Length: 313
Image (cartoon, rainbow, N blue to C red; front, side, top):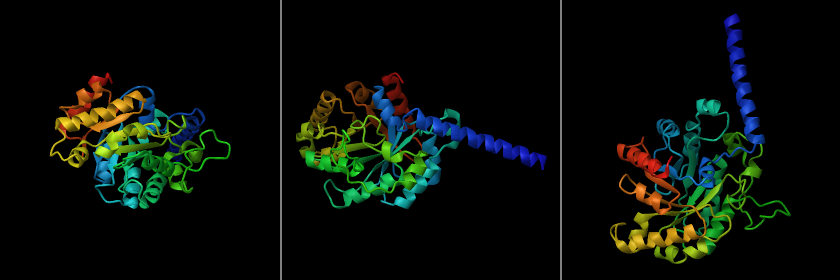
């Protein structure tokens, strides 16, 4: 009985410690979205594309040393229940206790399958955000109107009199699962798009994958609420009529997009590997993927380390 009592006391102490950490994280304004924290501090971030929703992969990714996980639901099944299970599998309670705050070591973000401007877009954004992800990648964005719709879908309608009322949010309010996953009581206040809301913890990021998107990049990057641009070299090269992203014309398009992002201080991302990651970081890309999941491959680990070395991280 005495041993059981001591065990209970130990468990209670752990619960109180985690509760105190939660209160601290909420009261001191600690940043929950690690990717935003890195971008605010001028540090590049590194991630991988994830197609494997297994619990084993979730555990592997949670302790991978990456900064973010790009969960691709455009080219993998759009399965919300599997996504919810995967996110729970990424919850690293030991790290939470050691760090004393609720910031995930690896931030989960999702690319939805809905085409830009489609009727399904708003519903899909709502579903993945309600599960608890920290941002959404929107595929094949080509103009300002599509960008505005994507950002509105990511936002809740703001309170009357809010300075950042526009662009008006379209997200329906039922955040119970997301609030529980984030571990906070003020989810509605913090679930807004950064940098429009400096305290926002959500990222609305647009994929540029077509000549139209490249041509309209200046109007896209000036939309309020835009969190970042992601260049998809493979789709971009295909849509431009080239068999490889290595074509000089494709690289020129990539540099056009990057230049617009740098001019307007918008974070720009791209896929990389061990041969290209250092150059992309030096060019000014602020977050990159270094491979795919299933455990980090030797090439992905090499690209991650080279990228960190190039960034001084």
